[in-house]
Amino acid sequence: MAPQEDQSNPRTLSDVGYHFLLGAAFGLFCALIPLEFTKYSLILWNVSATVALVLFCGTLSALFGKKFLNSLRQFLESFPQI
Image (cartoon, rainbow, N blue to C red; front, side):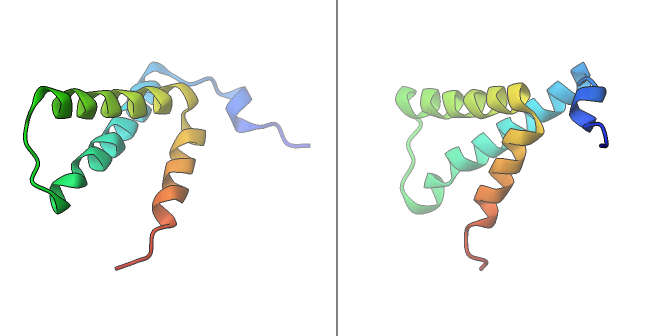
């Protein structure tokens, strides 16, 4: 049996930061999708919801790492191609 790579190599702080930034970028992408379809006004509710979504995706990505990013990738691949 081959050892699993996740258990033999602990994640470094730079890996956690990189995963956080990738998750935050995905959250920002999802938060900006409504701009394409509606008139978006910058009121406190919209800004706070956008920040919350970005931080939520970034935090989940930092905590779960590649597992969360792989699920995000599969989610994006489920959309039909243009």
